[in-house]
Length: 137
Image (cartoon, rainbow, N blue to C red; front, side, top):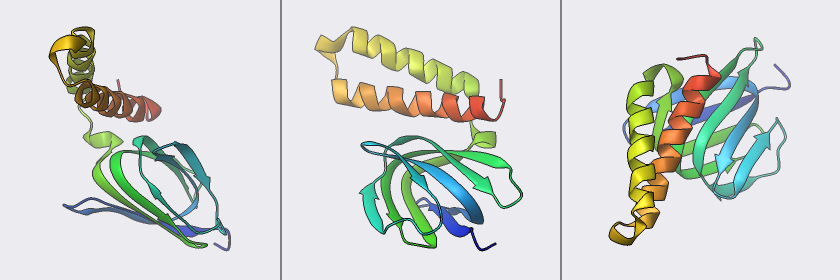
């Protein structure tokens, strides 16, 4: 357990995850951050995407996160997400429909809020990526 660190993922509604892990890949606003124990301290804006982490037993797990903040210390990572879903909670059909709707809104960009449609697309794609990572059809 000497290479492990604590990973917490919380939303305004619940503490989703509190695990000892070996590594994590976290979607930040400007790209992914790879984290191992002993990472330099960091406070950053959380992006939209698939947060992957490897547990001590070697299994890899996925959580879709969208918006919020990430705090990294040498042996503790705290993700405070506006939204987060475990892969098992994702409704793939609903996410695919949301992605299609957002794509259509962007196609008609002159009549909608482009930034809102892009964020909807990113969230839907992140849900699909997270579900796909665990083999969910």
